[in-house]
Every structure is written in C-alpha cells, then in structure tokens.
Image 1 (cartoon, rainbow, N blue to C red):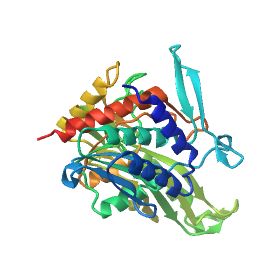
Image 2 (tube, rainbow, N blue to C red):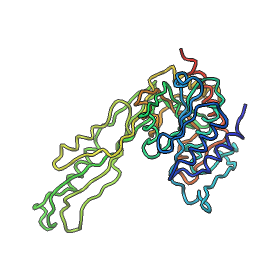
Image 3 (cartoon, rainbow, N blue to C red):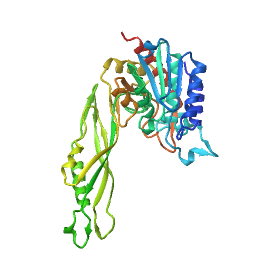
Length: 373
C-alpha cells in the first residue's frame, strides 16, 4: 500500500525546516512526530546525538536500527527566498521518457526524504526496533560519535544514505561497503635565501615536489566485501608555498585526499623519509564493510520485494555514519533514496516514488532481521 502523500508531507516539512546552522528545530519536528504517531520511547538531545527512539522491549529493539541524519549543508542562494527555504514539488521527465514527481530543496536527497521514510517504516514495522536521526553528520559524524559514546550499539543498522541508481537506473540497491576519507597535510620545511643565490638555502618547494611524486606513485589498497570489490584512491588536492618571487621558499605544504577501504591504508607516512618533510592527519572518516551475508541478504530480499527492478549488493564511494557505527561493533548496510549527483547541489531533489519504495524496504528489512535466531 502506498504511503506517498504522508511521506511527501513529512519530507516537505523536514526540508522546510532549516538545519544547516542549527539542527534543533528539525530534530524537534522528528521527535514530535514520533511522540504523536508511535508509542516509542523518544529522546531528543539537540546538543548530543540528536533523536533516538526505541519501540518495544529495549533489548529486542536493540536488534536492528534505522539510522539517518537531519543536518544539511548550507543551501544555495537559489534554495532560499525571503529568509525561507524553497521546497517545490514538480514532475520531471527522465532520460527514458518517464515522468517522475520529485521534491526539490536542500536536504531532500541528503537525507531528509529517507529520514521521513525511515520514520514511517519505524512506526509501521511489526517488530521491536530502533530509529535514530543524528545531528552533525556533515561535520564528521558528531551525533553518531556522541551516541556511540553513550552506548548506542544496535546489533544491525540500515543507514538510509543513498543507494538508488547505483547498479542500474531505476533501482534501489543495498550498499555493503563504502569508502572512508582520510584528509591529511604534508609540510616541507627548508631554509630561506635570496633567489639569486639558491645554493645558500634549502628549497621547500623542491622537497614538497619530491613528496608529491611519492604520493602520486603510491599503490592504493583494495578490499572485497561479500563479492563486491572496492578500490581506494589518493589525490593531492591543494598546494601552498613561497613568500616572494625572489625568495627561496622555506615552507611549502599540500593536502591529500585519500579514500580508504576496510582493512588497509595507503602508506602516506613514507613521505617523512624525505628530509624536512612531515605528515599530519587532519580528518579520518572510517570506511564501512558488512561481513554478515545473512543480514545483507535479508535487506536485499526486502529490496527485491519492494520494487520491480533487480537490486544488487554494491559499494559506495563516500563515507557515512555507517563507518562510525561499524567501528563500534554494529553490522551495517546502506540503503536509501538519494541518487549519485543529487546531494549538496543547487537542484537537489528526491523521487517521491523512491521514498515510498524505501519505506517498504525499511519495514520489510526490519521485520526480517528482527526474526533472526
């Protein structure tokens, strides 16, 4: 049975509630809806995890969780009018000629639409379960990390980030592995001198260039997760150095974006073998890998039942809160409505039909996993 009007209204309400600077109001919308529409125990901590709700016996509810986040990145100027967020429903024509109703607005794809679908599925699932919508995912998993510190460790979690149109158009897949991100800075130090006498100094840019070449030649790790192969990447993304056209530079630094896979990292520390070069990790968002084929197949079976197309187990190129949860011992997959290229864009949107599909996937998956022996 379709729940599209209810899901559309709830998604519209969430998207219209600003949460790029402060998630409190959006968290309150979620918590109030759960109070009004479920008999769950609901906690809203706007300075901590965000919103966490449990339905049924607490131990049984800890078996499986539906997880999302309600913070968003700052809206584009076109997504704001008269100090209000623009939320617009309109029909678009897809490449195959199909007409598809979509909801446009900041956070519709990443990921308030999927949060709304998870809320409705949480209410209607015929099993004890947990729902969580964290704050601060866009700022390095602030809410998820706080929840974990407070003991949030469900056995299984379905993180409602995007997995639609990954294996093929028109299909919502199940992600069993995603990359993490390690951002780091390599700094080269030298000795300043007048550029007319370069031998009197040590050129930091030359040392940095040597380090760049080393990074460029590094082998990147691969991982295989439930038959899905994923490769890491390493890229130099910014460089800065020098103080004047006639000065031998005493400092030069560059940033490295590394997309990590489970189990191994690129050996970036090797740059420190170069004289005057140091390496500092600035951010380390963990990858996720699901090693439980029974869980993955249960969610995949729910995805098969919820759509006409044939979903697959796939990988995802960027980090989510599933990485933090997996690191704390929760077995995770990712499944959601957002499509590649939708998140964080000025034309961000989500398919209303896919939100309805995701609600069915979440509900069916929760009921299957809750029945595990």
